[in-house]
Amino acid sequence: MKRQKRSAFTLFQLLVVIAIIAILIGLLLPAVQKVREAAARMQSQNNLKQMMLGVLNYESTYQVFPPGVDDKHFSATSKLLPFLEYQNIYNQIDFKKSIDADANAAARKLLIKTLISPGDGVPQVKPEWGPTNYLFNDQVFYLNSKEKIATITDGTSNTIAIGETLKGDGKNQAVDVRRQYVLLKKEDLKKTGPETGVKYFKDDKNIAGDRCASWMDGRFLQGMFNGKLRINDERPDVSCGGVSGVSALRSYNRFVLVGLCDGSVRSVSTTVSHTTWKAAMTPNGGEILGADW
Image (tube, rainbow, N blue to C red):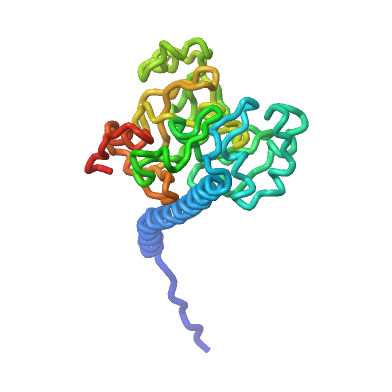
């Protein structure tokens, strides 16, 4: 009885099949990446929307927006927790003590899903601190501020309240202006401008990598930003002792997400002019937003 010959791939055919599979994978990966980015963006939009609803509910309850930071360095986010459905975490905080107090250690390290953008590849800056990807506009939310809807004379739909940004990576080396910034003293604020951080970053001096390390901390580059630099500016952010400085929102793609004072959320192109961007940051400057908004 004759045995039937089994057909088999030749080496050439096998190589062709492998090549076709490789091409298909190459075509598929960008599509998968776009789907992931879209999903991350949608989640971050939902986070910002929840935060903005919290801001408006806070204002409705107390007739003012939460302060950007208080004398104990607590952030606006800390005050918003009951309005974000995190009353249990709020109850763990002793607001009469500093954010650095041992009494606040347990709450300080908690990871809050609403405060983390899934598009940021760095999950946490320091293990003992719960991070955030959302900073408040320090022209509306500042030290012991008591702004309200009525004081936003430029229009709540034209004024940024919160912006999404990348976190630091904990490295104190000048590697990436999106992750590290220049940390100076409080006394240096008067002489600090957009170019101040360039030489420090080039010389790898006074570098900090704890940007957005703690949602509990309301100080500059922890809970607040000021937009004195363009979105994704090539110049580094500068914090003067956590009081103020110069900063930009840092994005992982071609857009940044912002929450406006009317509660809406929108994406802004990273190519928006700095003139338009600064106008959207001021609550009562009287500027007209450009057509690129």
